[in-house]
Length: 482
Image (cartoon, rainbow, N blue to C red):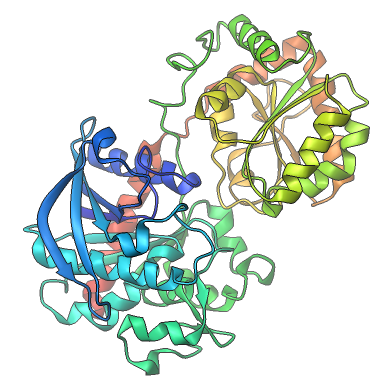
């Protein structure tokens, strides 16, 4: 199949979150399975031509309803030969932040979706599938189904929408609808309107041929009032077209046997070198070099991630002989929280309020445990990475964490690979961390579980096969509706 993968971020060009990692890895996995994948994203100002060998191509066009031109540039991923297109329009994308709280975010997203569809007219390449990702591309299915597919060029294209995080929906005032160029009759409760606002994600859910989320459990959760954020009813109406596919991990990047960023490469039979990585990180982070549980956190510092629970138990937690290392950025209140924790417990905590890819690799290799006490978690990538590095996850039973981390039993011959708590409650979190500390002291059992964790396979190959099935279903549904 010919697949056009539409995204708002992509490693290594630009990254704000896990979507960039998925956009970088899934197309490569599909490409290896024999599909022809091309990727398209906006040309943000921080994407440098020389660094990525981006070249201009002789395609430019005026986007309907905008008095602005879209210029097209492209690069080729040399490791996969995947063509990457960039929609260049400085008016919208020459900004300090790829998202940001900009007044014209609706226009930016509509312009991008229209540009993607317009570009198809100028390429001697028509996709079988357009794969959209999150609200920034979710208006594309609505534009396609209500305008573009009247043109024979588009009629045989199937549309898949992947929801990476339903909490972010692209909600704007009704006046933004005019930029779509669609009939105002479509602004209603059955299609794009929610609570009097224009809702991009709802538009995508209604008009995409098939929808998926990034774990099976999350696909169930978003059909409930707690996690549906107003879209639970429309998602439940489309439940036969709604699927969950667990994200994968790119083991060419995340593998302790080849990782160029860690001090000592290791595998399941050389865990002594994992201990050496821990000692090096302790030195680098100004933590005492000692044999105590090292808990790692790498995260966006936002409410979703459960840091309010951590704040409630931090004083009790710090009474134990352990260490905590955190890497991440986010809301100011959490920057303040962890700065205060670091000042209060300087010999037990190392806090890095920044983005640092190399340090992320070092933490995964060095930590004994990886903490993810999320309120909700559509998929989560770090718990999967942690398994490969023999770093035992401590997680809440929710979303992708529930799908990927089974609880460690009291005996070593079971199947568990992590510590799991169930209710969003700080006392439960504290108890499960206590259990992990006890587990840490049992060297024999710990070694067995670590080896078991490192054998888990969350490669993109498995997930890509499931996406292939969804693409076939999207084509089938499109043909039935045409």
